[in-house]
Image (cartoon, rainbow, N blue to C red):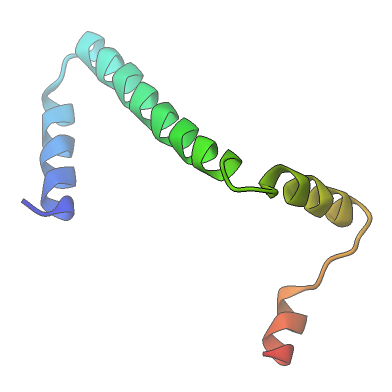
Length: 76
C-alpha cells in the first residue's frame, strides 16, 4: 500500500470513530507528529556549528540583512 492509499485508509477509519475515540486518535497523532519534529530538531542540533549559524541568521534577519527571493532569482 503506497502513502496515498494509506492516508485514504486512515481518513476512512477516522470517519468511523466516535467523538471520544476521535479525541484519543487526535492526541495520539499529535504525539507522533511532535516526536517526528523533535527528532528532526535533534538531527539539526548534531550538525557542528548549526546553533551558531542559526543564531547569526536570526540576528541578520532582525537587522534587515536579507536578500529577497526576487534578487536571488535575478542573480541565479
